[in-house]
Length: 205
Image (cartoon, rainbow, N blue to C red; front, side, top):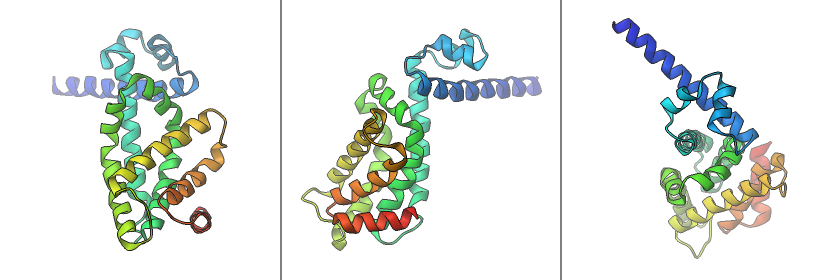
């Protein structure tokens, strides 16, 4: 009985993982993809999809949770222990953008289906981590802003969302967006544009 239960659980977990992977691909291809479309693409019946996710909104919310977890992992690993706050911020943005580029269409979709407050709550740990780096940079005179670090972290977050939208709308080339995002964040923190551009170019190379 235990072995049977374990087998059923493993199958259920595998089905859930497949549904999530296929749903992400389908939603990135067609943001209006229905649960029926996702079920067909995943090779399961509609009831199986609804057994794991009671609504399309719940499915998208789970995908957003996974995206945020990936972004947090990339952000934490990105700065690589850099002691200079500017380098740490730039490395984090570059690392996050590599992940965010995959999810940018999903995030735009999530803003239509997940409340803004819900997205803010999910991003709170990343925002707090950014605020710590910004506070260090402001204290050391690397950054200059009339905003306190927590408020500046909010501004950076919204700027990155805006840049994702710019890429989605064809206003910014995806291959250039990561570097542009890092330079924009640094200059918004009061770092001279030439210095920010040089730093990001060095890190990108």
